[in-house]
Length: 375
Image (tube, rainbow, N blue to C red; front, top):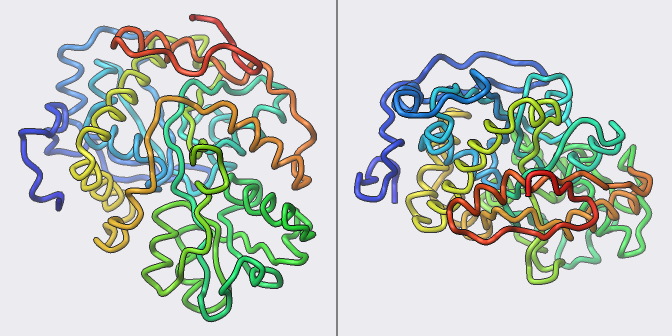
């Protein structure tokens, strides 16, 4: 359903947003400060309880795999739970840049892939972040030029784009190539297959020009390439048990979690309610996500792109911890990481508290890598 035809019957009350808080301004780390609905802030602030922080900065990507953030921010569902605490947002193109911002304190809570989260946690010796919730599963594909690549074996010797060295899709592709017995130097991307690290925003241009033969990328980039004539050679869902793997988690800086646990809980109430709304109103949520992408990039996705991309993405509160552990192992195999100690990377206490208050079951039970504080 087009965004302009959405009705009030199913649209959340907090989404009655007519104004933007401010113009877009630039922010460090190649990110962009995003407009936050002023009406949603005012509406929430009038009734919300006073929390321990005056504002919270949320980081995420303009990707459909970050649908919880796209929809939750646009519809005012996260701001509503924050009450008088102002929601500030900023976007990134890949996880490593967002991790820099989290470490620098310019982002408090972020939506991010498993590989950057693991890398950041290990490099800081467990001092910089906690994973506090899941957000999405799936939505990643290997798409190729059908004139140059017809089978999986044909990928050898070709040029395949990934978003950034060490990001989740980069690690997944390197692991897949290694499983096929191909040797690739992770740092340079050179070997039996050439890994070309390319910003998702320009990957379609690189494909169109012929400088890459395919790409292992998240949505909507994969479907944009299909619209350019590429074909889907492999859906990453097919490589995982039950077709599920974490593609996006919610992380928080440990400093912010320690000082403002109530704010973290409020954001998670917003994400849980957002996921619930997305799953109950898939078509309307698709339109909302597309409208959010237009706000962030100046252009919405063509119907053929978003209609192809949207069904492959599943939003979830569960962080799918077992798949993160496997992805960490993939980074080890690729030579990007030594065997990590992930003890304490999770603190699911705030999430389970929120789920309990909404009469929902808890997520992954306590175990290795989980901080049981707050359960």
